[in-house]
Length: 149
Image 1 (spheres, helix red, strand yellow):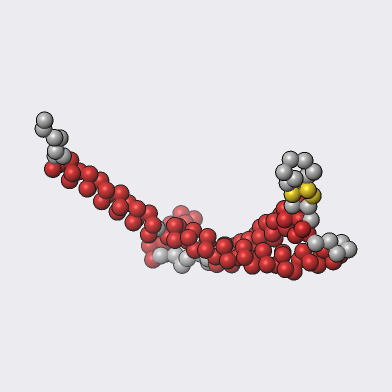
Image 2 (cartoon, rainbow, N blue to C red):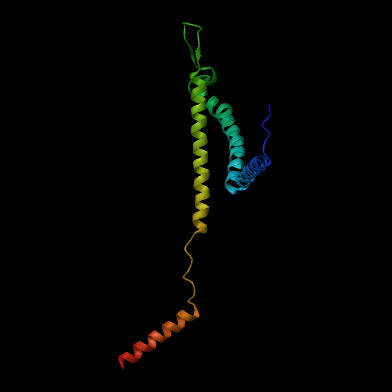
């Protein structure tokens, strides 16, 4: 029995295909949008940590103090049947407040950045007419004067 040996042209074709995919991937990765997105994800992760600390360490204790010492992190209820699951309302409330604060901060950042872009995009003064336009205007005015005589 003769084994099926791969054809050399088949191997070269597969290598070219893989090289094409690799070069396509390099091109995709080197685009500015992908790099911007990667930076945004990293900064967003750090920003989320700051907002989580703001909610958990500053806002929730103040809200709990205002509401007669309620500790939101442990606020919940145990269901008395089955394996007695614990439903943590406080954790959900903290996550909701964290989300709302994160969304508010992102909104404010976008508004500030957009205000910078609007200032840069102020309408420019009309450009100075070219020599050709000046000459044509002069010819038009002379023709008007001669036709009125």
